[in-house]
Image (cartoon, rainbow, N blue to C red):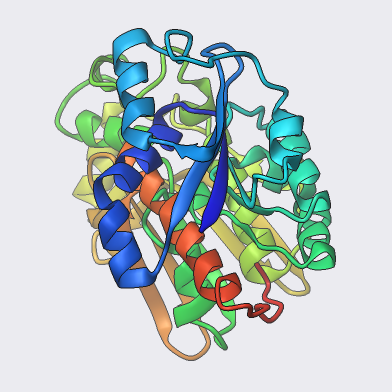
Length: 351
């Protein structure tokens, strides 16, 4: 029975809670995975702790009814670091809103958990960009798992594909559409909308934030490019090393011109080797219609991996969403259960 501490309970953690509520019996029967949510910690919505376990359905009902846990019996403020270090925590699921620049507060939460010999599952990109090597070393030194499938393409297994299915292959080149907001905007512009109209539509349906800067100026994709460089090519890159251009200067005329030439403009994150260096960039690229990435429309994501053994492999799927990212967290929890639930210690891997 795994004791789980949830730090953060926004859309992503709620997606995981919904899956756990709906599939508790199925997870136990098929995978032998039993769990207790022993604490849930938020900065403003209240906190709950119960060594016997908190019902995930109850947590979701409280959020739906009250927008938080203050109406629940036993609600109080809890220091997240104390909850993480508690003897009633085996696995930290860290999903707090975290700065891409500083990696906080997620970075401190993850460091604390790993030092305390707690497994960690996260969908936060900031801590990985700022301290990947440190956190990996901490996990190895403590004999615990540090997993983060959801940081690139939500529940679409972009990392596990390389980690497991493509094990033994060298990744020589990566090209990806890894930001659904910008892909949606470019798709709408192809239909005839201006940039401003396409952005407004994305905001209306909840794909784009009120402040879309991180997406449309390429920061989110640049963070993912940096992570891919580290994970897939063993590079040491900082966010500042990623060449970055967003989509704000892309016009409908540019899109139509590209189409007339058999190409489609996409915001592409690319990681590649140039002689003895690994480089990463994010930019609008006119992709030939014959390439798989050119056919990725709307808010979908895709990555093409160029490998030494298999040539090009493309994976396509959703790159965001409550349930979709909750699935990424679940896949990491089950991976920990398969390895450590049997008393095994996974062999060292690049991630």
